[in-house]
Figure 1 (cartoon, one colour):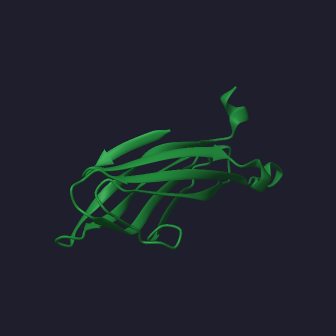
Figure 2 (cartoon, helix red, strand yellow):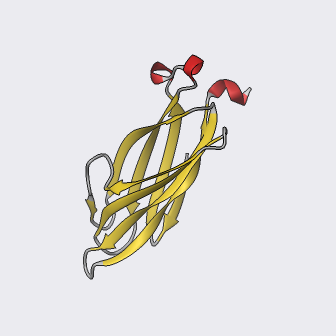
Figure 3 (cartoon, helix red, strand yellow):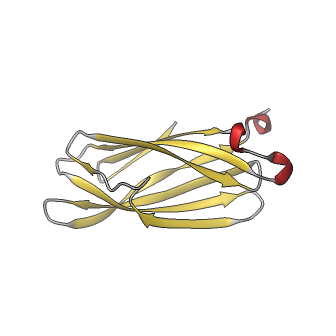
Length: 128
């Protein structure tokens, strides 16, 4: 698990290879990632958008942006945590993801970015 804290918003990520949805013969490798967002600030916040940079060891880079996460724009009171999981496919056995969430403080509508730590996407056999 990797984690980072930005503006007192802690983002933790755990990732695993998902062979059931992978087809190596067709260069399709699927990974599931689990994210926890904890509000350690003294203000209520809302997650507005996500930005992902996805790097594949074949040299491909993708950028994914959009509203919220998994169809939600969660609000977190001080001390609250929001968790979700999602997935990513690669064309090779090794890559990584990183990015940020655009958040807003509900008290004054100040927007800020909460970083998402870089995490590796590696087929386990490549670790031997």
